[in-house]
Length: 179
Ligand SMILES: O=P(O)(O)OC[C@H]1O[C@H](OP(=O)(O)OP(=O)(O)O)[C@H](O)[C@@H]1O
Ligand SMILES: [Mg+2]
Image 1 (tube, protein in one colour):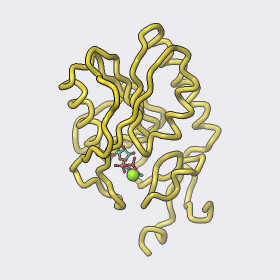
Image 2 (cartoon, helix red, strand yellow):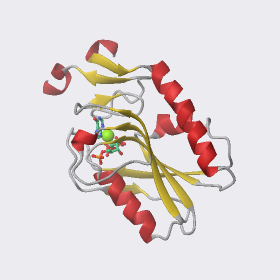
Image 3 (spheres, rainbow, N blue to C red):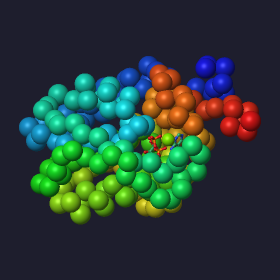
């Protein structure tokens, strides 16, 4: 798999160091509040697994499966709910975990939905922020790294469902998606 990657943008060590920092900041902010931590499937899965182990306060985990990219590299603009939460967000401090914010369409949809469902607060933590991809105004409450306007894979991020299991973030060689 490694020979399909043009460049490693963020190493496994850098990710793990950042995850520790984010976990500490989240612990300070939510200590004693029992937040509902919502992972956005499938991309947020590795980040959520690592990050929640670094949050030292009680929390509840739930998952939402939404998709707007399908097998492609461009957002369709239409966010589809494939699996909804099991938990009610009413009156809860909701903390959404994402692998990446690109166009911002997925998250702006979820934030509106959780406010509509009467969450007490809604905040967003993303591992990667790609501000040059934005189609809607959206600034995460916490972000691990800013990435350039390239299609990135690894640590949850896929191209046509592959590469999610890479432990680092990389850029694919163009021949992989041009073939
Ligand atoms: O800011 P946006 O342009 O909306 O892009 C970000 C979203 O796109 C990806 O999910 P995708 O819809 O590909 O589903 P996946 O997590 O199952 O890969 C990614 O995991 C984010 O959820
Ligand atoms: Mg995807």
